[in-house]
Length: 211
Image 1: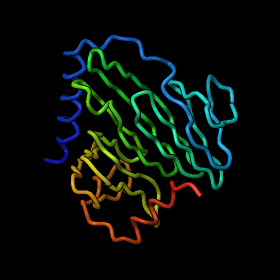
Image 2: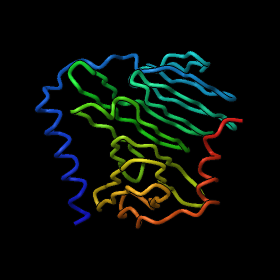
Image 3: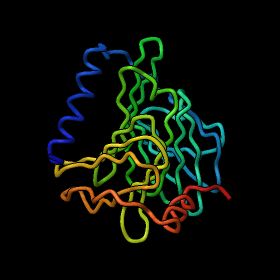
């Protein structure tokens, strides 16, 4: 059952976007840095750019944070991405077309902690919002969740909404706030959905909280 979950989810999303005729060009300018603590950089077209508040974020940008860094990126639709220290995040694709009710955001969470809070893109009729980690893809629907390394494993924790976590081995649906899963690798089924105790949840939040 779980092994088929990621296939079904991907097919549904593909059919939705295909039926909407998604051929519009993505706006290369997708958002901006709205808060910054410590140092971070943007890698764009092979060039490294020091990050500052107000820096524009574009499609295909790679975001790198240093020790003690915190970053808040606000996308064009109001989606918020919080990034902790020693992280590497890629903005692979972003489309926000409210006139045609189309939204697409594909983010690569390659390293480090993050928190993702969807904005108006979650209201689009035809949407695909996914965060791709090294161990699984997180399909997002009107959601606020955290992901990253914590206490010796990689965890995904839900604050609000629903997420589908899947890889080639299977998947989990997380829809109860305060619960999460552990990801032990791309070749392993995402862990069981469990309630996180207060200490672990607070530790997760601390990784993306500004001083």
